Image 1 (cartoon, protein in one colour):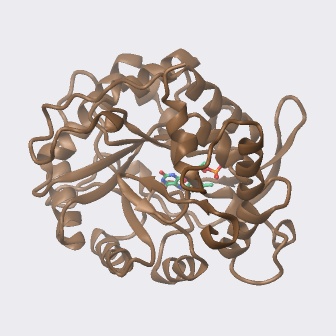
Image 2: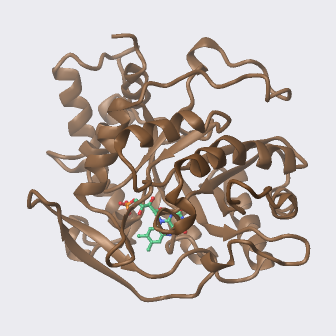
Length: 375
Ligand SMILES: Cc1cc2nc3c(=O)[nH]c(=O)nc-3n(C[C@H](O)[C@H](O)[C@H](O)COP(=O)(O)O)c2cc1C
């Protein structure tokens, strides 16, 4: 890309530089070694492992309702209220349904791929979320985080905390104060439970409240290093999570409303104070991303990388490429589509005067950087 188009796609997830912005969101596409190997070969930038349900040293899990087994997924068309047709995956499952030790084996495979520079692989966890009157079950935080740190090896440990759409549909998430307490305290709980320095991405849910509350959630998550915005919508009538255009419309609208605040700095004794350009929490986009243009819509609102799931599950006829894995075919469309690909979109931003070359190159990260510029 750099030699041919003078375009630098370097992006960032959880403070790590990655070759381009496209990663795979946690889910059914990152359950085993074969999937990781195929994605490394396809040239994906990063992968979130399926969400593990935390447990304490006795193997007890407060969130065990999320560790259910379900294999059947249906990839379906879903129309937005205004008629635009998109895709969604209908699925009744939830988190990782095998043992912690199986998960740790997968983390070790991911660590090896990460160390060899082929693919950044990061675990995802759902920890205990108490009611307002209850304490956090610290045993779950300690046992699970220490096990992950042991499997990962050299610090810092990177991990993503999932607040999932099925949680948004659960009576636990009916109370705004309760949700805000989780977002304020969970990153701190993880940090104090971890035997090593840890970088935390929080993947926020789309709560069943208005957009202003969505922004309040982002602001409340002060002690996360990265915010992933936002997991799928929840259809409470059907009891299902869904995506498509409604999801990206909502996510982009909320990101428009959000203005980043500096993180509190006193909680990070092990790392230097951030430089002035680092004063913002990093954002990573997710939701209905199926073109380079949509990647750029998230980037223009401050996202330095994106996580996709549905687009890597479409019928093969939906991709222009005629060979390779779904990940490889998807990446090909996202980057090279002549009207909607990343290259076309970046060149268009340049021609509109919204992106300038530095040292003769266009830089993807400049798109996100401009989102934070005054005015
Ligand atoms: C079948 C399926 C399973 C998923 N499982 C998880 C999960 O375990 N943890 C999580 O954080 N997100 C999960 N997600 C959410 C995706 O990672 C992604 O953020 C979301 O679907 C929005 O992106 P998309 O529109 O590209 O699918 C799942 C999504 C799907 C479709």
